Length: 623
Image (cartoon, rainbow, N blue to C red; front, side):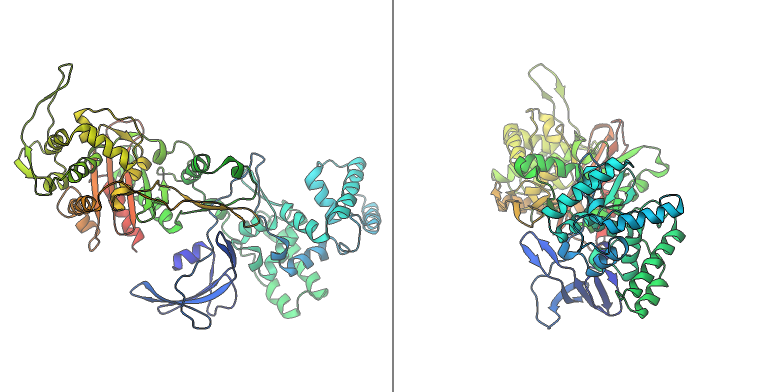
């Protein structure tokens, strides 16, 4: 809970008085939630108390002591999708801009804004006199409306003709639009910073960029600094020129107290405060090219083109920031554990999905989560090895086989139509005579699996894979049952989803809903599921997959993550090229792959590679 609040830039305080604050006292967390336009409707700011028992939320009460069944926090802004013009902004409607901000801006930039008709002859004459006396440009005579006209329609060229055009357009704009609407446009258009190659436009995004908080939560000194920066974003850049920025901010504060916008106590407190800027990379740290890549694909596949073309969309996703952070940590640190001294050149990928709703919660495509190139989680098609075996055993359980059905574990030789021979072996090169169907699965024995696959029919196994969500064209070769099929980590996650949902199929997606800038619901994901397998057969399968983690190939989880109930399946491919593990608890399905980009041997089994990353994730997630 506290981690989530910190990610949302809620501020820890002793006493909660306003939105965006929280306090912790013993087992109670008090939160003052910000207002937000959720897809299901607007919810105003609200203060609640959440009582925890054994680290679980036991009760939620509002400020009148009434029990609440549910309570929603405002969502984290993960990223902003913008055009090739690389202008980045977060739109803030006029009614959500603090009065103090507007009054301070007008005080410093255009005192007669509400009284002129787009241009101010007096301001132009005054600026001319000041500049003439100085011998160079000291003061501008442009109104805010003229500045907006220049920003929207004109270049930065300094000429009388451009000034004339600017004034003419400003008069037309003032005639056509209300003063409040023009001021709203100006405050959402004004340039305030450069974030790498992307410009930061508008006070909404600038407030996040400089202070990591929404504009309606800015303190007095922060409002003064933003207004100061408007005068010259480069010249008064508080990160590059802090002394210059503070001097200009303090001038704004002095003007505020002299004009009665703030009192003397507010002034003394504000002027003594340091800049207190957020981390410079705060905006960029949330971005993850892996899930943005998936978001673009899902937009193309699921959302009508008529909606995709609309500007200002709010796209609500299932991404869990805590799960995402834990997955990124698990991949990076897990690979370091597996690949000491980086001698193997290993890479990894992880896909986290919600077991109940088939929603993507986190996605990692490699060691460097900011790398925007090849997306291993979506596009790295690799042989899946023993991960295919649950499909074989599920086919058998659906056909009436029992967990104690005996399977032959003896040397076999198979021939295809051209006379080619195939002699499968178990990983330990041993034969056990006969084993139960259950033991063959949790010990991941190859030979009994081949026998079972031939008995139930390869065509039936292939049909089961299609019902699980596999879309690849699959050939009916006996080696199929040992994992000759190639899938990406995301496709594997989809394949295991019905197994974790009692046999129900639902496509694994990330977009929950899309709203317009005016909060009109435009798209919502369907909740429909299809029952594709018998719940009884799936229950027997998942019970056996639990034994994989206690008595089988993933039994090291009993000491790596003691006290946790997991089910899962390891996967290892020929020559130890690919290491796989799919594990799940009562909440999440975690699909993990470890290998090399050059497709050389990783020298790892599923249990010595991918399983370690899974263990790292679960350790982080359950801290």
